[in-house]
Amino acid sequence: MAEPVLEIRNLNVDYGLGDKAVHAVRDVNLTLHRGEVLGLAGESGSGKSTLAYGLTRLLAPPGVITGGEVVYHPSSAAAYDVLGLSDQQLRAWRWAETAIVFQGAMNSLNPVHKISTQLTDVLKAHDPKMSEHSRNARAREMLKLVGISADRMGAYPHQLSGGMRQRVMIGMALILQPQVVIMDEPTTALDVVMQRQILGQLIELRERLGFSVIFITHDLSLLVEFSNRIAIMYGGRIVEEAPAATIYRDALHPYSKGLLSSFPALRGPKRELAGIPGSPPDLAGMPTGCSFHPRCPKAFEPCSTAIPVLGRPDTPDGAGRSVACWLHPAEQPVSAV
Ligand code: SF4
Image (cartoon, rainbow, N blue to C red; front, side, top):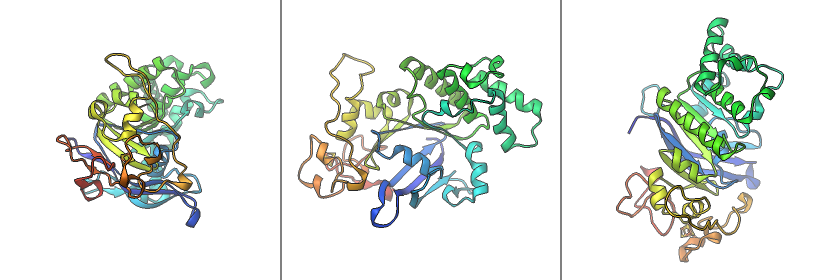
């Protein structure tokens, strides 16, 4: 496996302080490797977007990181914890090292500025010495890379379709050639055909430019198609992590199975979509034990009282995967690996 570029260690994020704090992300451990697409799936409120905001330190109050580390280039001598960067270091790190495309990003383009200005402004902010000619050339090149003709440089956002605006945002995220790109539901507002076109193009760009992607969505079928590995979140915790093909073929956690049966199968015969009964838990009043137990069709004796630890499962193909479920007690907890 390629070397790790980003390692999230025991990350915890709360909303609020003291007794009233809501624990939105708990004890998350994840590693992103060079050139990898790591998918992060879960229903709304599972903590996946909070995790993205937390690791990039973009949390708005009352969000607060209460523990953990986000280590950049963990295996190199120059490794550093992003949570320890000064504001100035953080500004340089964002966009240049790690870029983010948020939900509905296509609506975050400034309506009164041309596309060219918005693309070149990123370059101007991070590399003030770059000549205007080079900035324009780089912006044109980036537009072409994301499949938009360079003669649209002079267009205003309203003159582009939703898909084109989202491509501009992806181009803007890639313009400084970051090593990590975080995509938070980047294509949810687009139709299915456009979603797949844009994601296919992103994967192609990743192969050419070599960046790594954390791809967040509730649509597990998209992740199965476009990710190398998938982590599933529920109630603020990672409940299963495995290669995408393994999750698709043989998910172990009942919640992962529920998510898979909520979307049409990519291949094979048509099947009934089942969905998951009940609603995601209220983070302010989490169920005891495994937080999925009130909705779990497989719940049994220990589930309502003891929290299962995320770790390597007791299955023959347990290496390289982890699950938090009493049906598959952890042989080795993830935090101890
Ligand atoms: Fe279901 Fe129990 Fe596993 Fe939780 S620990 S997913 S309730 S079987």
